[in-house]
Image (tube, rainbow, N blue to C red; front, side, top):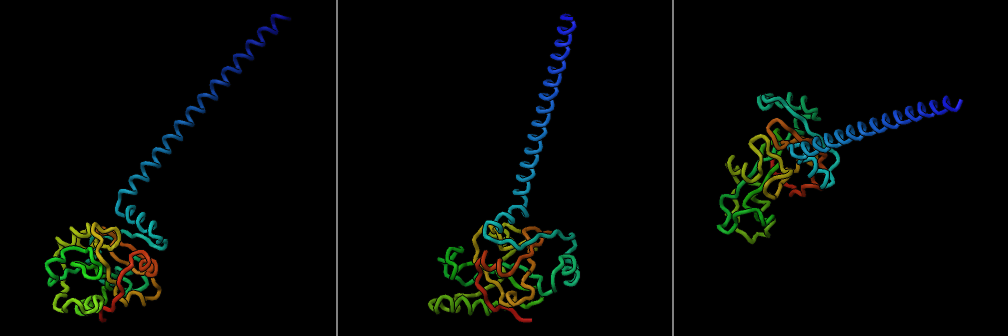
Length: 234
């Protein structure tokens, strides 16, 4: 009888040891799996932050913007009529399609070479609708008034900056220019007509040719803090 009990105890001990070993094996497997998942998530987050969309999203969120979205478009997007572009973006109308253009003051005094003076900058980015006709003369008059007439009006001559200059200043290529996350802190001018759009959500370049950015106008204004100027006509 005693021998039988001893053998039974040995069997129970071996069973308990096997259960312990199995539990340890499962725990190790789980930890390895969790670690791999965490590393994968971290890698994905890091990769997202290095993309244009990820970088600009981070900037927008940091500046309090919540209502925005990105949309990839086909490579021949700019060959399409405005109505087709509106449809692919889901924009409210063709008037909600906008672009960012870099202007240079070709008559600026020799000591004005950069964007350090917001009121009298060498360069400005203007956001205007595709359906509008930009009027550089209104920007000239605005800047003259902004400086209280202390700078001669002839010292303001706003022209489209060369594509190479635009790229160096913004970090974006043609048709991909956006005023979010630019290499240079260029003052921004928002055409007043855009602030009157209903609904107040417009689309502009998203940092890449085939990437577009949609934003709530009110949040764009709070984030970018542009000058609002009536600088276009229908």
